[in-house]
Length: 322
Image (cartoon, rainbow, N blue to C red):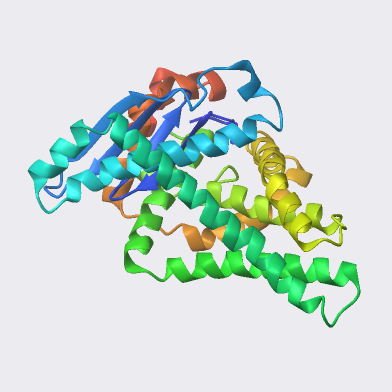
């Protein structure tokens, strides 16, 4: 058994999909799905990003923008893949799955991602501003209006999270989300990736997309507080132009959080971890097995434990025994 239980960064991340989990390690990702017949299907592919391996996509505060776009595109792709197993006509699902890489599908995926971004910006950025602007007709203090706008933005975001968490299908998705986090926490805490060890690991993780989105909201509150222009249209344009900047800043914060355990990082990560109590749920053993299958398709956790936590073959064998 490893003696050092301090968190070690692994570099893997993922997301929950319909009846499954996607795990990504570098350019390689795997989607594990529990099929209707009970078997686990695992598909492994590579995703190099919308811009490939360009140097400008690695520049601090710029890389976050591309990382966010890539997460949306890949997320949509793996979600469509998992949904294909649950089509009413299985043969249609298989045909659609085979054609997933076609140009038409890529175009539709791009349109869907673009619409998702537009709706998110309208709901979480523009709507709070418009509502706070109504307050400006009775309140002349610009600072109070800015604070009011920030509070509305936070309330809309948290309210949205709470609302969708009440949906039955979403609750099951959140169980797989919990399984994803538990697997990553298990190995980053230096434990063998077994069902028993994963079950007792935390379902909250500092690098979660939920935390990233919360940081986007909080950072926007701070940034927009200092935007002081009188023209209504100009205010909206400035907010839209600053969205990529805010995403870049938020990405750097979440990136730091995933690589450090110092007190300051622990404090700024706390709100995101609290919010994850809504977006994750405790999974069952079968869900854990799906998540483990996804991890093992892209990540050699045994070598990782040997290198990072100085495990021996004997210790690994003993830890993996039921």
